[in-house]
Picture 1 (cartoon, rainbow, N blue to C red):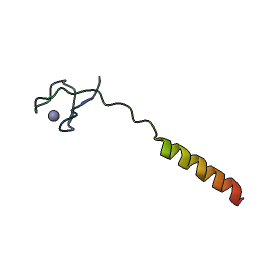
Picture 2: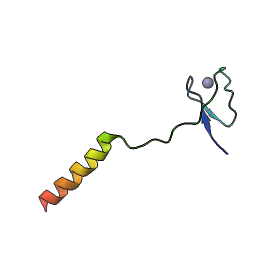
Picture 3: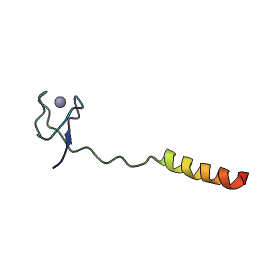
Picture 4: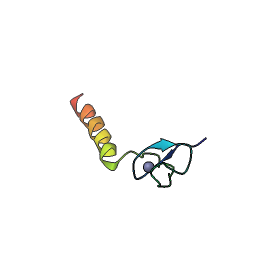
Length: 51
Ligand SMILES: [Zn+2]
């Protein structure tokens, strides 16, 4: 079972056709942003420095 998301109105559903007339697409899995990645490293680096 796949949850589909309407890119227009943002509603979720199992049917590809949204009630607003837009075809729902499967939402892309959210990858962590580069910002978060570097933030993590920064925090780690800071922890190491403080010890
Ligand atoms: Zn919709």
